[in-house]
Length: 410
Image (tube, rainbow, N blue to C red; front, side):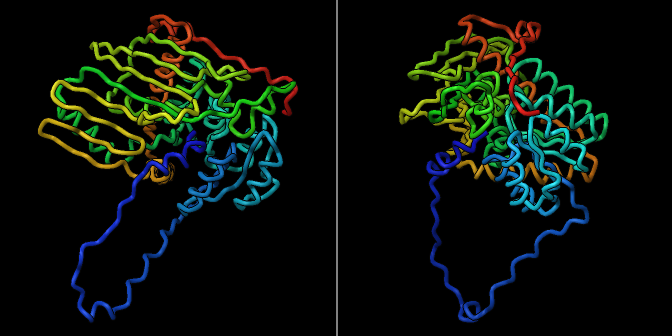
């Protein structure tokens, strides 16, 4: 869910190139350059289905094609014309391009071996569960759900996938970046001492929020679903999940409680998403984690999608872009994060292929996605209610968000 942020992210990065002077012999200057390595060949091509060929969906599908081990076998989207146009561009037979709310079911029946789920998060639990039950491997975007029942359903689907020897991968990129891995490794090795507190940011620009029509059909196009909490989860779930997962990954556990505040301040809102939120999470061992988020066009100065870990002797930072570091102590490290957005997806696509072809179906990202999404929902709910809320209360309450699907094409 970073397609709307990608251009902004890239503008922040500073690429510095240069070469020191090197004495090169005449014989080397005359030598022909070595030919590029041949593209990797795969004995098996996995028949892949795509559910949600929007901006990021189409981009991700092309990365699957570039990998070389996949063929786009079919496409599903609520809007049939979108499915057919994407299928034509990606090389899928038009007969395997499906529209309507139930299009994904017809896609699963079309002979696909794996499916990419990247349409609207409200539908992810239903689609992922159906895929696993149909014996189809699952590669899915995040957030994996917008409410607690949906999140728990993803956990169950991940476990069922392992039982059925299917791959189930949630496409988080930050934990695959070498610079972030190095920071996390050093922190776990005691580089900053015991962690006292954490501060993280999830700042992005203003999302589209057009007036609602007679049905929610218009909310299913062009990312408009981001402005409806039931469809997209709100900012802390839909966008901030990247850094919330990063904290979850480094800490290896989820918080036990949260309290906070949120507000909607844009003029004439149509969707119910909030515009800014501040929440403090509490861990069982006393560590406190402050998370701040906004979706406003105000030239913000926060280092978005970062998390700083303040220890007793040093400080560390994870970052989706910009500098990752361990500062202070005897394990100092500073390096820019790589191209997390695209390289992370490319690594996940390769891992997904290996999981399917080699039978490595431990599927660790499924449970981590459950823990991270529950944490984001806990923050959203505690802030909305403006009170202290425990994770146990949230799960026991098991509140379901409902969407009115009347008038939509099946």
